[in-house]
Length: 140
Image (cartoon, rainbow, N blue to C red):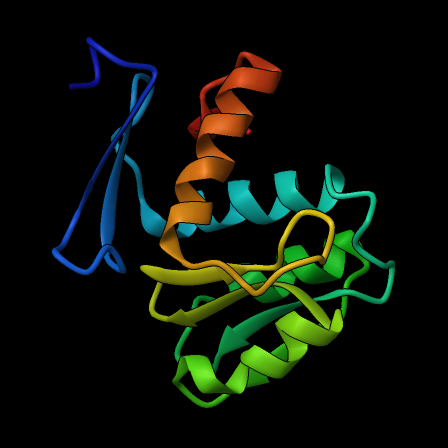
């Protein structure tokens, strides 16, 4: 797939675990995807408040901690489970929340007008990175 498409995806039956393939990396390391998605989304969501933070579970990679610090965003660390992120995604305290290992995530609506989205938004973020920047998401 890496030679046929700029970005390719595969997922399990309920679409909350996924694999991402890019031309440069082949199967992308999930932590690299998270870093690319966080960097891109926070740089390209002007409707998100400067107080809007990054959510992660206690078992998640410390790459998220370092990236949130570099972006000047607060880090909200929670127990494992999506329920811990819902209020923060809805009220604007968080724009991005990774909820268990580097495979399940949620993002606030672009303009904060709707409910948090799940994996479909992560795919949208990768498509958007590729379309708007012309770059491979792995290279961000």
